[in-house]
Length: 173
Image 1 (cartoon, helix red, strand yellow):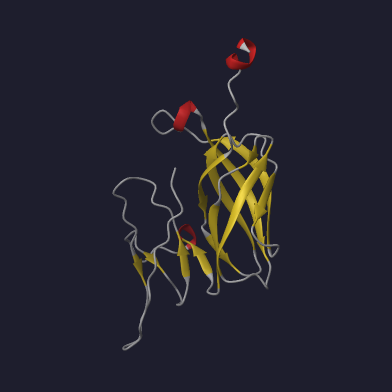
Image 2 (tube, one colour):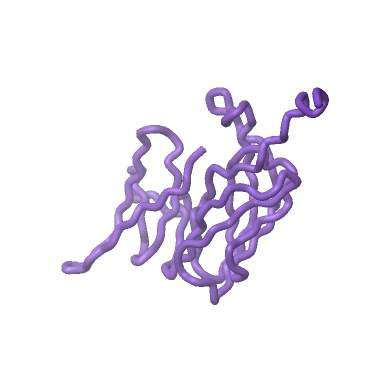
């Protein structure tokens, strides 16, 4: 019994975030997952067969502060490729990472009808740091990397045109 008490259980796979948070139907998209105890993860599981994923690489995140997550575990970055079939249902889906320690917690992944653009791919408007959105409707996927960071966007709107804005969040680290 004493030998069993001395063995610490291995930490479970834990996901903190996904970027980008979603995709339009049909493309292949590179995504970055962050979490802990993800070393040796080998598969991505979705709640539907119209979305699939493949892990491409796993590496430690360069430390900011002490670079550690809960329980002293290092944060890992998992680069993966997701494929969204043209017949995937629009809206929120759920995925998990699978590895030798079992199945991770779920994170959301959205399928959009509108085209999706990553903030860093948008051109800068003039001499400012404001990003230009060339065409509406669109989904802009970005990351706030530091506390207090502000992102600015500019776009053209016709008189009387109504716009709908929604901000989605899927964790952070």
